[in-house]
Image (cartoon, rainbow, N blue to C red; front, top):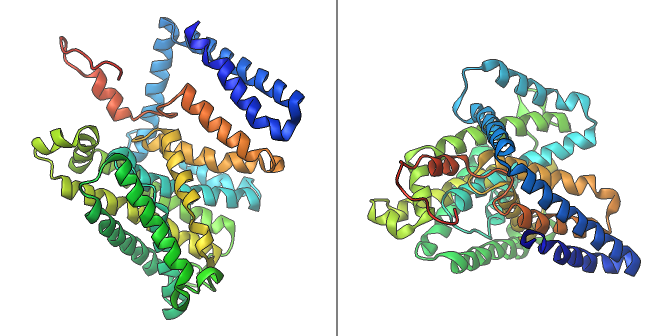
Amino acid sequence: MRSFASAPLLGLWFAFLALPFAGWRGALWTGLACAALVAAARTLGRVLRAEPVARRLAMAQEAIGESWEFMLRGTRDWRVAALVLLGLVAFPWVLDRYKTDVLVVAGIYVMLSLGLNVVVGFAGLLDLGYVAFYAVGAYSYALLSTWYGLSFWPGLLGGAALAAVFGILLGIPVLRLRGDYLAIVTLGFGEIIRIVLNNWDDVTRGPNGILGIGRPHLGDFRFSQPMHFFYLVLALCLITMFIVGRLNRSRIGRAWAAMREDESAAECMGVNLVHAKLLAFAFGASWAGLGGVVFAAKQTFVSPESFAFFESVIILCMVVLGGMGSVPGVVLGALILVALPEALRELTLFRPMILGGAMVLMMVMRPRGFLRERGLRLAEGALPPGVPREEGR
């Protein structure tokens, strides 16, 4: 019965959230419904943990993990890759402009969350100012495009490179910080960038933003429709997934994993913590810069309001919700947190409550995210006979 103790508490919490919107009667029914759903989920969890069912679920999870890996390491079954890619390419032809535009925004957030996953999920460095690198990429291309007429493709590389430089500049003063102290410093860095963009009128035009940013070109072809940006973002997302996955399986990825688990032990084993941390900040920031350049080219307008602290929180929620350290999980988390608010657009008044409540419920029911890091799970299962497992893992 202990596993069901949280159901009434969660029901009471949801009833309290619904009280200002639905009144006493509606809040009571909301709380009862949430408590019943939690109790049903607990019961279903017990059933799924039964030995035969759990074995089948483990086999299914292994198959899903292997199907994702072809994007990261390649696969011999090229037919599966071709079918998945063909399905993605066909999306703009079966969806309307609005839904295609939502997918473009989701793709930008996939790049951002994968970049933050390098810092938070792989290296274990809590970064609450990640949106600053997003802003650096967007404003760098906006200024280069409006002042010097630079085209999109050189601006894409320039924005990523400049964001990586800012990532290194942030990493240098926080090399010896951990946990809450690191989070506070990165939070301050993000706010500094936003305030500078908001007050440096001579360069950034302050709150008025920058207009007339150039769109991408391929010869005489100009990107102007959501469909065009969908294919651009899709290509960048696939490249990001491939590179981030390869990084996770490289020597530097193993160094990040060791540093994430225990910095002192990693340093004793020969991991250069300064080099590893600076690389994590640089790689993570570069993908945020890419996303910023694409965002600026798509909107043809940037302003400081687009890079508020709440954006960093949302991107971090995508990483935590999907599963820190898991590339497929982070992609899934980004897609859910972009699609869910759009699906609830008709319930504008209740949307923050539903979104926040769903996040809390998810963290209670599955605190490690949708898809746990597969490499860590395999490592735990690969202990030699006779070696005791660490409790609580």
